[in-house]
Amino acid sequence: MFKEELNLVPHLPGSYQMYNKDNVIIYVGKAKDLRNRLSSYFIGKNTGKTALMVSEVARFEYIVTNSELEAFILELNLIKKYDPRYNILLKDDKSYPYIEYNREPFPSLKVVRYLNIKNHKNKMLFGPFVNVYAARRIVNLINRLYPLKKCDHMPKNVCLYYHIGECLGYCVKNIDKEKILLMEKEIISFLKGNEDVITNKLLEKINFYSEQLNFEKAKELKDELEYIKVVMERQRVELHDNIDRDIINYYFDNGYLSIEIFFLRNGKLVGHNNKIIPVMEDYINELEYFIALFYNKNERPKEVLVNDNININLLSDMLNMKFVTSLKGSKKKLLDMVYKNAKLNLENKLTLLKKESANTSNANNELSKLLGINIYRIDVFDNSNIFGTFNVSGMVVFKDGKPSKSDYRKYKITVDKNDDYNTMKEVIYRRYYRCLVEKSELPDLIIVDGGKSQIHACMDTLRELNLNIKVCGLVKNDKHRTNDLMDGDTLNIYDIDKTSSLFHYLTRIQDEVHRYTINYHRTVRSKGAISSILDNIEGIGNVRKKELIKKFGSVKKISNATIEELESVVPRNIAIKLKSYLDNFNKKND
Image (tube, rainbow, N blue to C red):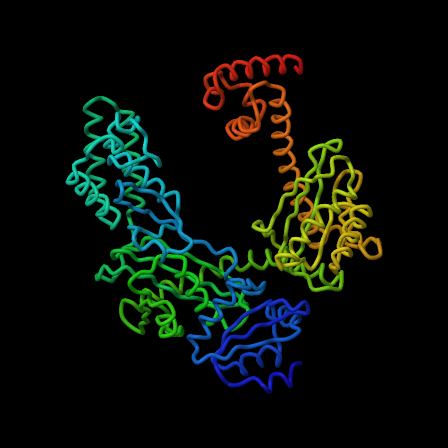
């Protein structure tokens, strides 16, 4: 396979791109030696996701670079641009929560997540916190103990926080800057690891409330003190330089790579994280790729300690960070400790990972074999209405057997009657006309929740758009349960074992699209009911109608609101009319 093409590939560094039959990039990689790396895919035996990816490759391209570093940078840029389906490390990646302290324009503290930590170097960030609950509880406690600015806006008068001593009144007062600097010094000292600052302050307040016989308040603060002691009781390590560093190590087995990161701040272990991924190619390359992505989204410590198999020069040049390794001493002991955690995490989760794979990827592969096509992405559609009113459609997406919720879409349908055929035609046309215009990803399979009518509507519309996509229908029995999978081309029913993983997979797909569409229909129906009622009240136009819907959300909540609460949206005379109308409306419908 590709024997002649591979003979033309040079022994040089670069990035390569794998294309499928639809001329879509499905995988991007890098290599020190392009010919050796590309040959490894097509000569010899592949397993797992690598074998699946290779089975879809129709052609490959490559770009030669001057160095491995340039190849690495190019690889990352191409992955971000094309989002290939088999570059899994980019999927579902998220940043960690941090505590952010702002001095200007007024001192404030909050929990934040930044998609790109580099864009916020002017902020004072403390973390990362693996447990967001702990971060929020610490912020809430500090806000109670120190008079920081609490509100997001700038009110005209001092608020409740000022009167209870939890704000200095920044909106109307000229604040003593020395007082702010002293407060800031204590807060930053605590966030850097000096827990005595807060614990001493808490003990003072506990003693004060106890002397005042306010035991309830004293008990509340005592609980906070105990929590802080638990949170701040970090694991001391054998390094005494107090340098902020991360320690990264890994364990590879059974086609899975377990990556473990320990976060050390001010000489204390403040948290750790583990990520387990199925490996597409050389796992060291995947690990380096993960590290590059991780530090594009998260805080960069002064030093990262890594296993000696990792190319520290490449990562240092790529990220402009200090990467080091160690073969002996205290740092080696720390690396060994992180390795043990990576190994234990994989061993403990391997059975669950294999079971999950059987229920997702394996079931998806079964469906591919049944239909005779390679399936990665499935778009699933369902319609919902009540006697032809409030017509909506929902689309859910499954990728490699798993829901891809960021790709879900909702559609309000213009067909104002109970017409499944034209409803399906409209939503299919709108969806895939837009895909063609925007050149976005098309599915390998479309599943409609319904039988012949919905299938015909879908296929007729796809032909109008000159698209050739496999279509199937999920048919329910008289108990409204998943019963059969109908082929769109032949209208034949596939023979599927009702106890198989594939049948349970199809049931999950149908349940998910039905849940998503019904929830959207309820929302639209609720807002539609509000809108139709509000149209009958003089003095309520489109603007006030939208404000009432936004504020209360349902007829019931508007009915239960007081005139004073309604006055926050409409004038008093309109609020009285609205309240009177809804009271009479509810009496007639009881």
